[in-house]
Length: 421
Image (tube, rainbow, N blue to C red; front, side):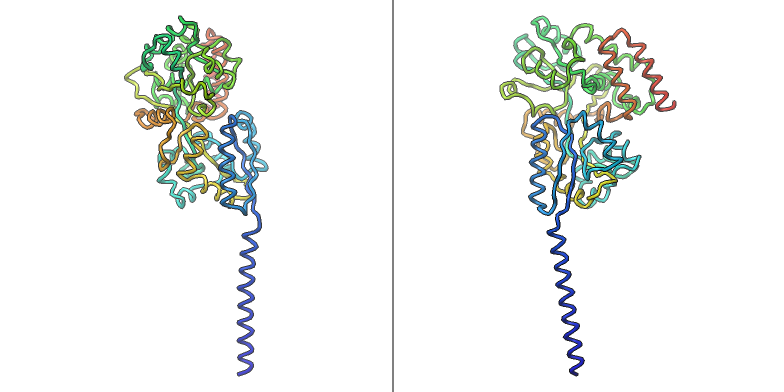
C-alpha cells in the first residue's frame, strides 16, 4: 500500500511538472518576439502616414511581433519587386490584382491565400474583387482598396469661362476645351514622363470607342495593333494633341510635376485616379470637382477602370504565421475604411462604411453604376513585357503623332513575338 501511494505521489508530481513545463513553454512562446517584414509601395506623405498608423495599430494588438517596414516609392518598387520575390523575400508585399498578381502566382512566387478567404469571411466581404484576386481558382491576393478613374477639374475655372455643367459627351468635352483655350487656360494637365498616366488615356478612349470586351481581348494579346479599332483610339487621341489640349512638353513632367498646373489654375482638368485627392492643397480642394469620362459612342456599354490594390505573402517569406495574422488584421471593414481614406481610395471591403469625401462618393457611384464592366488598368490587365512596350509606344506617339503607323507596326511585331501568334 505504501509503495502504491509513493508511486501515485510520483505520478502526480510528474504530471504537475509536465503541466508546469507546458505552461512555461506556452509562456515562453507568447513572450518570444516574432518578426514580420513588410515592403510598402507609396506615393506621397499622406499615403505613408496611413500605412504607418495601421502598422502601429497592429503592433499594439500584437506586441509580441516585431514589425519592420520598408517604404519604397511606387516607381522604384515596381522595378525591385521581382528581385525580392525570387531571393530574400519580405513577409508581406503590397501589389495589384489581375494580371500583375497572376504573373507572379503562375511562377509559384506567391502564397495561396484561399484558406484565409474561407476562414476570415473574405468570400463575402470581398465578393466583387474575388475574381481579380484569383489565379486558376485559387486566391493569392488580399484586396485592400480600389479606386475610380475620371476627370478632375477646377470648378472655378469652368465657371469663369462659362462652362455651365460637367461634360457628359465627347462633343461637350471638346466644346469645353475650346472655351478654356479661348481664355488662355490649357484643358488638360498630363504627366507623360510617368508612362502609366498616358495608359489611362488609352484605356478610356478604347473603353468608350470599342467597349470592355474588345479592350480585354486586346489586353490578352488576341487583337493586332494594326486593327482599325486600335488605330481609331489613337486618331481620336491625336485630335486632342493637334488641338493643343494637353500642356506643352507633357513628357517632361511626371505626375507630381504635372499636378501644379491644375493647382495653379494653368490647366483645368486631369484624367487620374482618386488616389491623388489626399495630396490636394487645402486652398485648392474646395474648387476641385470630379466627373465620369464622357461618352463617345452611346451604343458602347459604359465601362470603367477600377484598379484593385492588394496584399500578398511571398512564397519565400520566413514568417508566414505573422504575415497571415497581419492580413487578417488589415482586412476588416474598419481598417479597410481607414486605409481607403488615407490613400484617397474606396475600401474594397463591402462591409466598410461609405466614404464621406465628396469625390470618393462620386467615384463610388461611378463604379457601382457601370454596366459595361470594370477593367484593372492597362498595365495590370496585360503581361508586363507587352505593357511596357505599349506604354513606350504611347510616349513615342505623344512626342510625334505623325509616326503613328510605324509605332503601331512596331507594337504589332512585339505582340507577335510575346504572344507567339
